[in-house]
Length: 207
Ligand code: AP5
Image 1 (tube, rainbow, N blue to C red):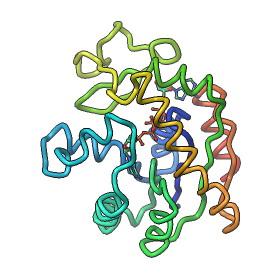
Image 2 (image 1 turned 90 degrees about the horizontal axis):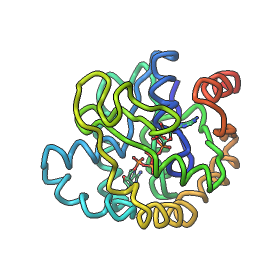
Image 3 (image 1 turned 90 degrees about the vertical axis):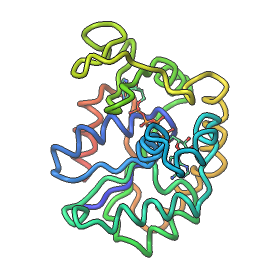
Image 4 (image 1 turned 180 degrees about the vertical axis):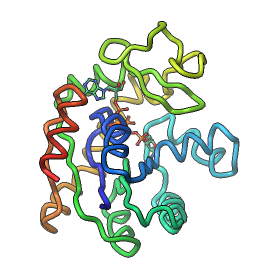
């Protein structure tokens, strides 16, 4: 099964994808994680996109499409995948049509106040990408990753100024995909406000 997770920043796409990939036995491919990995390892791609991610703007379509195309060409995608954070523009969606068949597009719906609460309280393990929240999903020891023992970080784009910009970018460039996929009969709306296990179950029911 090939899924696209669509929704505003902080709606819980990464959290639910981490749970759903095990339940469904498919891959989780996050373009945000791929970019952050490139930044952490200092590749030419990482150097190119570092400032773009910190500001909350989108990486140019050509760069993103090439990266995703390369990832989807790998054999392991044959068992199915969740694309988390791609496509984010109409041009990316058109390009995806040429790469793979998508079975469902999950549209995570969440109000703005909850989005801001979730993003401002998010903490992350830099090396593994494991996600926490200071209130909703705290680590066992404050500020420390449960498994690696590393100090948790706040993503640069989870600072207030970048959050405001990311929400504006989402409305302008990504929200039009809701209508795009609705017209194709692929869109499945999900209320993302509940606890993660409830959101997961609601999604599995829809699938
Ligand atoms: P990306 O990493 O994709 O960021 P995003 O879409 O803004 O999504 P987030 O990771 O912020 O949120 P999420 O929905 O995954 O929420 P999460 O589960 O973490 O992209 C980052 C950047 O990369 C972009 O700004 C852009 O620059 C670039 N980029 C990426 N893809 C691109 C593309 N296709 N084209 C161009 N540029 C691209 O949850 C958030 C918090 O809430 C966590 O703390 C979590 O613990 C908590 N939480 C989650 N679910 C729940 C719940 N149900 N109840 C309570 N708390 C919850």
